[in-house]
Length: 452
Image 1 (cartoon, rainbow, N blue to C red):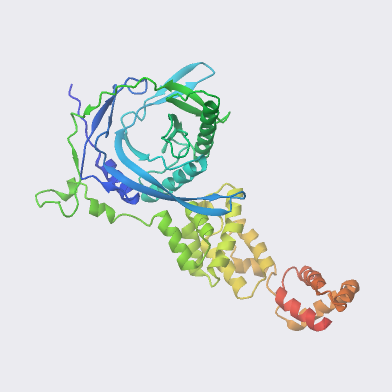
Image 2: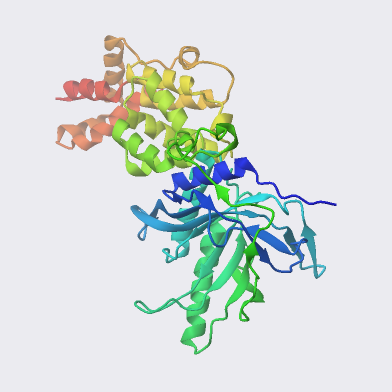
């Protein structure tokens, strides 16, 4: 029986697109190798990889993270990308501690895999987690990977070593198959401290593979790497060198449909997360940290920009409502943006009523809460049914203010003695009497006039 290896064109295109997004150099000629080793989750006894000449090299990933005691200072960092290589995935070992047995899942064995190798440019768990989260966003934006770590769509191996500043890197330990950015940070920080404790007590770090136990927060030894393993790398005999073209070296006798063209793929690059954040800050004059929240939540940028287009409110007011009210309720109810009962047009209508002075800010909060119920009512209908519109009758408002003054002689006496801070209490009483249907600035003006 003949056995053929066939290269998946879509995998190559995905690798090239990812390489371009990560500022890599795309090798126009890359090669495949066989990496031989015996392990239960690798039934054929070898893995097809790109050891000598990968599809992309020498890139970088810019990311940001919050530092400081209160995590309120945003800094930018850069990690170098050594290479992006195409591989065949192996199977998956499922360790059952209760029954002291290991099960093997071979569903993914032989499936195309893209491996991104980073240089040792990160020094703590938080940095690694921030870099991985940014990578998730980029891959999701590109469509080359959904990036859901919990479902195994993206897995992370962390190589950790410690050393004194200015000295060579120490012996490294590899923590395999970490399935969340949060666990990645915990695993790395634990492993750093474990190695420091061993060295300070005169011990020796073993070159080994470890696993992370999220229940205990510790890394556990799986197998050692002290004896150098001979993978017996050899050129993959069933796959010729991978040739990738650009417009310059695409000859006329080559069918464009049957090749991968770097320049054509470059035209498919969407707006990447970092560029999107910069555009949001420049275009809408919002804070940098707000742009991070918008971009990091799937679908929130589109929601925000749609609201801004449809409302007369300042983008900074819009961002306040979206981050403080809208996003808070989404998280509280464990909903995605596209599952929200409030549409961009509904929020736009509400903000327009507020901006035009038809309702007060407190009334707007009530309307927002009603919109969240998802009963199909518009903001205008809610305002009319619940009589939340601002009182437009100036004479009526003056009468209400006069009643409040007469009912609070102690506060009035304090104000007349020069303590004008008490005026805020009277404003609150007017708001309560009108159920929030007054503009505080107008109420303050009437009260000041009556009390002067």
